[in-house]
Structures are given as structure tokens and as C-alpha cells.
Length: 353
Image (cartoon, rainbow, N blue to C red):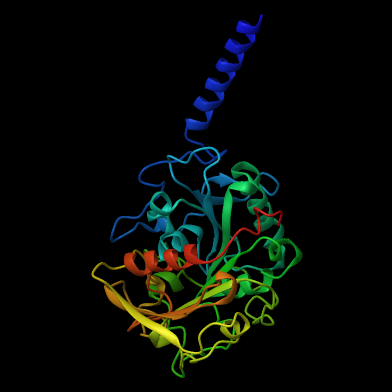
């Protein structure tokens, strides 16, 4: 009998070990290499870049993208990022504007990229976003999410600022990356000549958009969609990324850096990209403008980091030189932003957030 019990225990242990060794497939989101609906280096088709994803959020029936390592193991620790598109945009445009999908395996990222049918975020979307976050936590396991970040471009950044200190997100979010979506701790301010250029003829006529996936949102803007929220005061690391031509002047100080007793001055370094980003706003090249953004091209980014922050917080500014509001991020600056995010202290979800 004792031998039988030992044998059964060994079989059970082997089965458990085999299960743990199998890659974890997230429900409704089979993993693929390359990721589904991945744009080529240039010339992404309009029907691809304007996609809202195929993963279904069960409570609302709305879709989103979910990217993760295809070799993800059960019990593996990951960083979870919720990435929000800007006004007039789409899920797959955001997914290639800030191309985290290229770094999920190297840096063990789980990235949810939702889509608003109105193409601008408002309070009516909050439940949908919360449901996505809750479902990912349930499948991955809160003990396996070492950090959770919000990332938002433009109006998606304003929305991140609005929701980050809400009851749902304040106990979960470890960091916020604002992609031209406002600077927490002292605004940079829009450049005096910043504006939205005229639409191309195709966009104005309502025909298929060029490979940028941006145009005027249908049905008008929800109330308050573009109203800057009050500065969020809860606890999180913060990174601000912007194009040089869209801001007036980057402040040399940061109230968020002061909050965490960081260095008074930043440490500056530069990263050089020889490869262009994936997307741009093809609906606003009639002609385009430096402030709004031209076509993708290589570039240099200045990374300004406030050092020695308390509690391993990260506070940094990243300025893409000679760039505007809508050129997709290049690969090296994207990777540097990921590294900054991963260097910050996390664990709110792990500890019961």
C-alpha cells in the first residue's frame, strides 16, 4: 500500500510538472509568431492598421488585442501593460505606434491594447477597461504580475491620468507612461505653432484611410474627452515621452520627482535609431507639419532620468528630437522605454491590489 501511494504521488507530481512546463495560452488569444496583424516595416494596409483586435471581452462583447510570449509558462512572472490609443485612432495603430508587441518575449510582457468604437475614451469605457484588466489578472494569477503599467498616447494619456487614481486602478497600477499625453508633475505645454493639419482628400471624403488609421472620430467627442483631468496624486512611477516639435519647453523640474526625493537634476543620455517606426498619421499629410508629425524616419531621443528616487520609483522624460505628435516610435527608443518601466518597483497586484 505504501508503495502504491508513493507511485500515485510520483505520477501526480509528474503530471503537475508537465502541466507547468506547457506554454500558457490565454483564453481567446492564441499566440503567434510573428504576432497577429503585425505590420511590415513600411506600407501597412489600412484594413490592418485600423483593426480593433479579435480577442473578445466577455462582459461587453467588445474586442481588443492581447500580446504575450508564446513560450509563457504557468507561474512565470510578467509585466502587464494596458496600452490606450489616442483620439481618432485604433487599437492596431496604437499597437504599432508604441510597438511593445516586438518585445513581449525578450522582456516577458503581457500587453492588452483595447479599442474604443468612438475612437476616443470616456467614462463609458471604464467598465470595459476594468474587465480586461481583471480577466488578465485572473488568468495570469496576481502573484505572477510583478508590475502593472498604464501607457497612453495623446487622449489615451489624458484618460490614463483620469483613471489611474480611481478605486479600481490606484491599488493596481505601479507606473504610468504618457506618450504625448500630458506630463504629470509640471506640464511642458504645447508648442505655439502646434495644430492639427488639414485632412487629406481621401480622409475628408470618408474613403479608406491611408496607412495611419487616424481621422476625426465619428459622432463627435464625448463630453469632457479632451479636458485635462486634475493632476493624479496617488502612488506610481511616471515616464513622459514626447516629440520635440509638439512641446513648448520641457521643465527642468518635476513635482513627481520631488515627491520621491529624486535628484534635483536629470541624467541625460541619447539613443539613436537607424530604423523608422511603423505608423504615422496619413490622414494629415496635406501637407503634414513638424508639430503634428510627418512620415516615419530614423531619429535620436534624449532620455532624461531623475536619479536615486525613493522606493525604487522611476521618474523620467524622453524627448524624441525633430519629431512630432504622431510618428510611430522607433525600435530602440521603444526598448529603452521598456527598460525604464522594468527598472521601477512594482508589485501592487501581487500584494492584493
